Length: 78
Image (cartoon, rainbow, N blue to C red):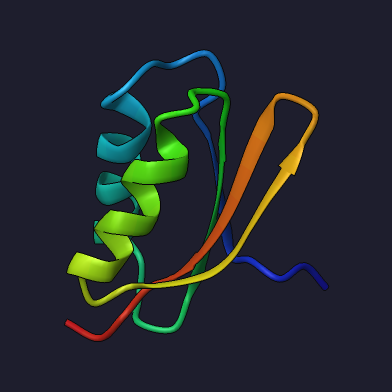
């Protein structure tokens, strides 16, 4: 079993697209579900954690594999 419900691959997209696509994906999810975001734009390392702090979503994990940045976000209650 994976640690996420939905995966969003934004590889190759530049700021602000990884964040915008992340926000859009979270809108379609239910509270408690987890989104795995893959990004290659270094700006996502700043944008996504800040967005999670400002929203009702929780950043569960951040990791880096090669040039890929991986975020696990849990959708918060509305």
